[in-house]
Amino acid sequence: MNERNDIKNEEEITEPTDTPEAEKTEKEGEAASPAQAEAQPKPKWTLERWLGEIFDVLEDFAVFSAFFVILVCFFFRPTIVNGESMEDTLHNGDYLIVREIGYTPTPGDIIVAQNISLTYHPDLLVKRVIAVSGQVVDIDFATWTLTVDGETVDESLYRKLDGALRTSDYTFPVTVPEGYVFVMGDNRNHSADSRFTEVGFIPEQCILGQAVVRLFPLGRFRLF
Image (cartoon, rainbow, N blue to C red; front, side):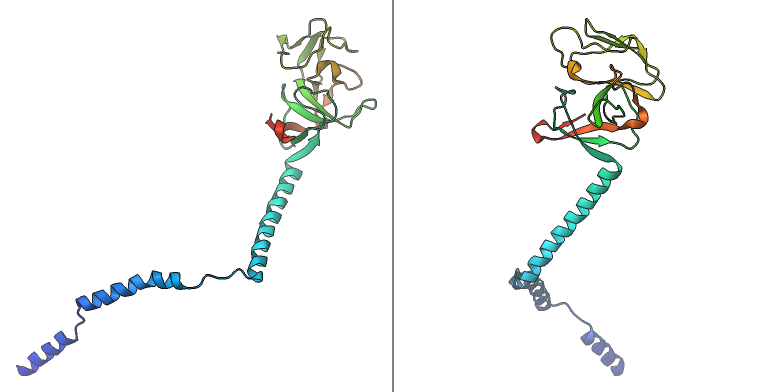
C-alpha cells in the first residue's frame, strides 16, 4: 500500500505545471522579440547593394523594351503622317500606331496603305475608307454631296473650302471592285485619293492596317 502511494506521489511531482511565474516569463520572452528585432542594425547601402538595385532596374527595363518591340513588330506598326490631306483630323508629322493583325476594312476607318501608283508620292497613303467591295459611290461635286449605296455621308466633320469640291477624272457613280476599297482624305480639296486615276481604288492586300492611336504630339493624343 505504501509503495503505491509513493509511486502516485512521484507521478504528481513530475507532471509539468503552469505557474504564474512561468506564464510571466513566457510573455516577457514574446514581448522581447520585436524589440530585439528593431534593435538589429539595418543593412547599409554599400556599393555592391547599389549595383544590385541598378541591375534589377535595368533588367526590368530590358524585359519591358523587348515586350514592346515584339508587340509593335507583330501586331502594330508606327507611321508618320506626310502631308495635309487628312487635316483637320491628322496633321503633317503626326505619329500614328497602326493595327495590322486581323484587320478588315470598314467605311469610316482611317487606314495606312502602300501606294502602288507610279505617279503619286509618298510611298504610304493615310486616308479614310469611304466604301468597300461592291458598294456604289456617287459624288455631286457642286453641292459637296457624297453618297454610298444611296445613303448620304455626313461631311460636316471634314474640311471644305469655298466653291465646288475638287473634280475627278472618274465618271460617277462608280462601283468598288471586289478586293478593293475607295478612300478619300478628310481635307477634301487637298487630297489625292480614289477620286483620281493617279491613285484609284486601293487593293485590300496593300492595306497595312488601321490607325488606332495618334501617339505624338502628346498634346494631340487621340484614339481612333
